[in-house]
Amino acid sequence: MTSCPAETTLGSAAPEASRSPVIEVREVSKAYTRGQQTVPVLLGVSFRIEPGEFLALMGPSGSGKSTLLNLIAGIDRVDSGSIMVGGVDITTLDESGLARWRSRSVGFIFQFYNLIPVLTALENVELPLLLSPLSGRQRREHAKAALALVGLADRMDHRPNELSGGQQQRTAIARAIVTDPDILVADEPTGDLDRASAKEILDLMCGLNKSLGKTIVMVTHDPKAAERAHLVRSLEKGVLTDADPRLHS
Amino acid sequence: MASLVTYSLRNLLARRLTTALTAGGMALVVFVFAAVLMLAEGLHATLVQTGSANNALVFRKGSKSEIESIVERSVAPIVEMRAQVARSADGSPLAAREVVVLMSLTKRGTNKAANVILRGIGEKSLELRPQVQLVSGRMPRFGSTEILAGLSLSRRFEGAGLGEKLRFGMREWTVVGVFDAGASGFSSEIWGDAEQFMSAFRRQAYSQVLARIEGGEAGFAAFRAGIESDPRLKLETKPETVFYAEQSEMMSKFLRIMGVSLTAIFSIGAMIGAMITMHSAVAGRTGEIGTLRALGFQRRAILMAFVMEALLLGFLGGAVGLVAASGLQLFTISTMNFQTFSELAFGFSLTPGIIAVSLGFGTAMGLLGGLIPAVHAARIKIVDALRAA
Image (cartoon, rainbow over all chains, first blue to last red; front, side):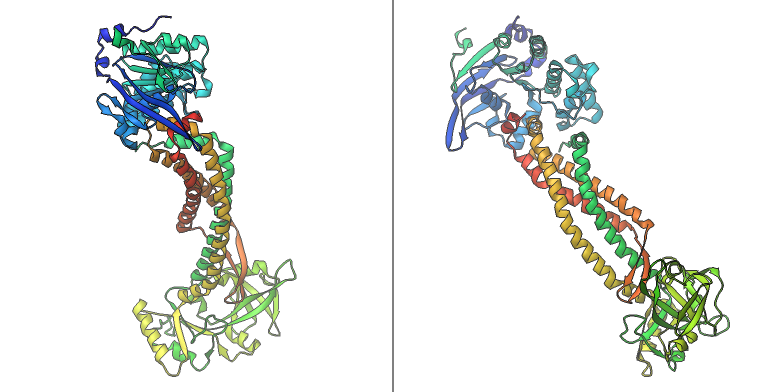
């Protein structure tokens, strides 16, 4: 498998790429309370993701990589530290401000696809657009375009249970990109898929990264998946174990 | 705010059996609720229709029903001669002296007896009550033992059919005609010559005087002032409609209070049912809630989606219950009117007000049942919810 080289994307200077913001994670700490105990998950993590970059976060279970991803995606709160996205400190946003920011700026790709079972593929993809000012007709057009982009134009009236795992994940990717967000966050996107489907999904993500300039942050256990990223960072027990290779280049 | 109506609707459709059972429970409660209101309304409508708005009923001061009223023979002409009383073509006052007696008759097909009203009428009684129409037979001759039976009574009581004979007041009476008075209380009465009834029952006085009043409300006010200020008369007067409407008050109030308190108890059960349904809906969809929140839907959009679902459930239950209850309009109930101690036939009456109240009641049950689960759904933390996916 070939990776999606950073130079290709950044060098080609797609107009979308220039729009993607820099993500700066600064001294972020997070702990969970389990009963009486407080379990530290992240201990002062700092790093930076460049616009249009495809980053893979790796690490053993419980290392804090999913927590870090959730914090970057704005669905969880830091205990201390800040996360700057395009110059905005999302840790200072209130709950509804954060929800609005997510709806515009983040596309989610989950391990188990998280499609709404009672809605068709098209309706699932249309869902995030309900939060936009688009008309019903515009929403459907956007959703159809997104589904066409992931190669599911002929499956849009199917319910999730009528689609294969790979097709469901592609639907989820269409839902993630339909609002044209700057950042895609993916939590084990290939974790529930067979080899072939996993490759398709990774190819698709590479394509989105390359041609649309989407910044991708992906948590994965799968070294094959991590290979496709420009950059792999490892977490262990709440700290990044490797130095940012870019600082040495 | 983004609306998840499709989502709510689809989820109800997706869980057809649960939706049907929960809505069915609520439908039963709404059915009982609407039925009782329709019954009370039917009773009220029947008694209100019994009167005509421009007739005045003159009765003994303080009487609550026609049975207890007495108007002496000597004072009846004084009432009839008041200026506000309309005149017939021949110049005589358009008024009738009536006597009302209770009597026990046996119901057809049973040995059970029930009280019915015998109304001794005057020659103008039918002119004063245009809603009363002869449907078969002929009018009785005054001065004879011929009687008329109300349509609903003639069907239900032994000997009250056309051509049949009834024995009361130590005489035999022949039913020579059957009249229909629509859904009014008259349909449950027997009518005959007032003078004949008085001699048969040894009555010295009339029960009331009925008179057509001219000049609308002002005319009635003047008529009332005249009657109530005349020292020779210990009488009062009310418009006929008002008098009969008051007769329904106790019974319909009783029905309403009983019905509403019973359904209030039932509705608790139905609400718990709705709550369990909605709680399991929330529990089964925690992951979906997390996904929707992650996509940017606010807490209140989630709250609204589940409240909407519960409201739809309640509305569905209300609508089904109401449709079932509307079928009751085909039935007629005959029961004792506690105020007059006489048998009265009346139907279930569905009004726009009852439709609105019943649908509102169903929807409110859904809302109350669904609110707590919906609040719970909206309060789940996104990361916790996603973990459940």
